[in-house]
Image (cartoon, rainbow, N blue to C red; front, side):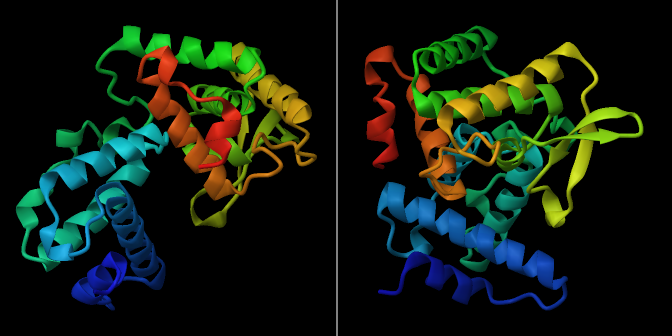
Amino acid sequence: MKPLSVQALERIGKNWGVSSATREARLQHTKDFCKFVSKEFALENVNNLKPNHVQSYVQHMKDAGLDNGTMCNRIAAVRILAEAVGKRNIVATKNEAYGIGRGNRQKPVIANQVEVDRIRTTLAELANNGDRIAMMCHASAGLRDAFGLRSKESLMSSKLVDTLTGVALRIEAAKGGRGRDLPVRNDAQLKAVQLVAQVSQVLGSGTGRIILPEMSLEKAYNAQRTLWRELRLPPTCIQPDTQRRKQ
């Protein structure tokens, strides 16, 4: 049988009524979804997609720290696939059903603030104890909190630039490939930038970024997702960073 992603792309076809950038983005989002479902559920037939596959994918994206706008775009691609295979009902009609929405991009829904605080404290402790992946994730989370960045932006951005209005953080990997500068306006933002500089120096990336030197961006994504998933479990389930890097 053909790989799940190939089956999916054959079913949805190419919508020439949209721009090439939009079309390619949707196809890539479809591939990402199929890759996840194939790996996590060993699904072989695209006709066997179920609601729990979609729900698990949403949780996977949240664990990876993706912003709401990105998750909405990816869920839109899943809806197109679901309709193509005659299973429109496996995807909720509104993104709010999954706790995401474009209107709250900078204000994610937090079901249990106490639990979130516990996870962030554990992450900081792991980083302070020398866990290299935790250091990367801790610095990345700091940038997301302080500047409202997407996950990819927070992993890639580190450069400070002088502008007419003062010092700013140069955002890399922004949507559309366009760079942008965000002013450093408060102590929280300054501390987040300083932490990035410290972590980069400790990890020895040589680029100023917080991605481990031996990792690609994709591997950094995966390592971040794995650690955040573990932090939701009891402390005894957290693996050493060397083990996570092998995954």
